[in-house]
Every structure is written in C-alpha cells, then in structure tokens.
Length: 80
Image (cartoon, rainbow, N blue to C red):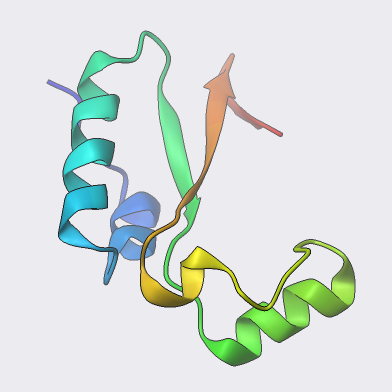
C-alpha cells in the first residue's frame, strides 16, 4: 500500500473530503507514484499565481478545496 509523502499530506490539508477520497484511491490505483503539489489556496496565493501567469483565473476551485494539482515521479524526479 502506497502512502502519501509529508509534502502531499500538507497539500491535501483542507481539501474537500470527497476529493480526498478520490486522491487516496488514485494513489493506490495508478501504476506510477505522484505527489500533490497544490491543494487549498488562499486568495493572496491565487492572486500571486494569476499575476505570475501560473493560473488563469481568480475563480479557481483551489479556493474552495475542490481542486488539487499533481505531478508524477519519473525516475525519482518530479515531472511537469
């Protein structure tokens, strides 16, 4: 059974329980390991990401806990 890294656990904090269950299942079902790189965001974090071009909207589901960003590990490195 795979376990979340501390980084992923930190980023899953506050995520909606339904999405958390989906993510827990995905961790067990996917053939490749992955990390949760972003979960719930504050308004200030979202503003900063939009300003930097890393997000396109201030109406992000990250603000309400209904979105996560993930990245796969490939040969021990995070792939974007």
